[in-house]
Image (cartoon, rainbow, N blue to C red; front, side, top):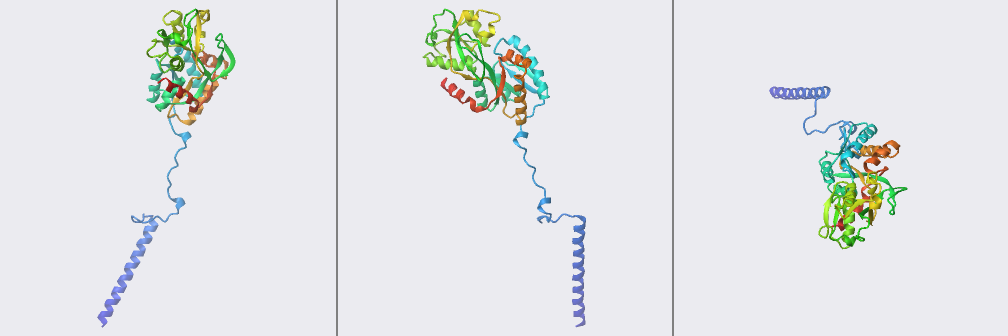
Length: 334
């Protein structure tokens, strides 16, 4: 009996000792900051637990340039235009606070490809070229050029700034070509097939007059609307598709160009040229670029520079919806 009681007492004492040891172990873990065992929930308040980092706002995403590359296709003599564009680098660089590189491209498809491959940040794109670039997710319009309107009768400018212009066909003065239908079988000087004023709009109007621009005329492509004017003047083409009124570009060299040529046809209004940025451009930088270009039109010296480059008088903010009619017109050419 005594032996049994001794065994019981021994077992109770051993159990108490184990409980004390376990309790001390728990206290030591708490004081040492030991992590709870796997699968245990943290006892820290929710406010102290780590939370995911907030996503950046759209204004803070996208491409941020350290050097801005700007490219355009000459609308006049390419040999002299690049030199005229050089002052634009400094004007934009001063406004943006980063280096700016302005270059001339051979054609609009090259600019689209460069913007799509992120080699060019800003492109001067005419409406149809912009629509093409937008469809390829290569560009987004941010500005439209402003120009003074043009009088149909004599090609002189109006006093009103407008955001659209016309294309026109010209022929030699005294030509027997009096209507678009008379162009059948004739030679026409065009710009690139992506040029709104130099091809798309006049070609659609020619097609609507019953003359297929692909099969019913002989086509030559020239680079620069001034070259189209000269092609007619020199007899290399019977007619030329030009922006209204590109004859003013060559008037300095040919003072009587308006007497030597005649307007055959004016198209419907076309939205003015765009300044477009690569599609991933940071929104804050879009605003900076818009402000920088708009400021060019508000200073007499800088306005003269952009006028010599592209006959622009200034810039106004724009958006993609303004080019829905361009898409409809491009469809009509197919």
